[in-house]
Length: 321
Image (tube, rainbow, N blue to C red; front, top):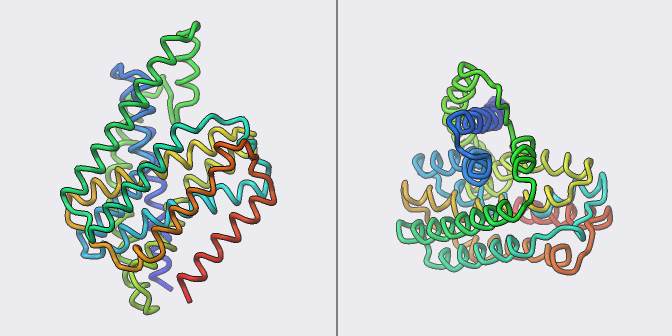
């Protein structure tokens, strides 16, 4: 029982510390004059993925790379099937109104590149550099596109105000002491939470006789997908389908390119043969399920919500039996 309590405590610390770090970093950047556009493309993106990144680094350092790889692959599968499925049970996501073709193609390209590198048998320094180079190209394209969009807009001042309003945790009047507190809590809490969650997950895996890979694909993956799930549920309630779909696509792309890319710089991440036989293809198949919503203008209604959620339940059942 204590192991489950430690795992839950580690997860809660991770989520709170990640949110704290994002708030502190966003407001620090804005106070020193970095534009909201740059903050949203870099600091927020990295900050919201900090729990997954810290887990991956801790797992590699602790000699449990299966948790690192399982977390990324499992999170990407959960993001499509669970993070879009559950909110659709509450309210229809009007994805027919979204314009996500380009980012979806980037995500599919990242998925194919990731799988191709996985067939080398290990994510080493070479693979890390390839993934991070791809990440740099995607971020550069996103930055240039956003910059063009802003330049073409007529009401630049109004648009900047809207960006600040939509930017997670932005408060132009936040005092310096509060910014420092947020940063310290985030920087202290993230490694502490990651270590607690990884250590307890390893022990749970040994106790139940399952592999670290399966724990990474299930317990850790679902846990680190909770922020995306919360964001998507709120987006569904507010009828902001573009936020929901964009959140999933962006998170998946970042997981593949940044998390494993950075973690592989710390140490090699061997690829368990089970990933090559099953889990990577489930991840790719789940991503392809987005095609009707991205290209064919389908909405994710309650029926689709049932289908996606049921598919995830079936996947987890196969892993555990």
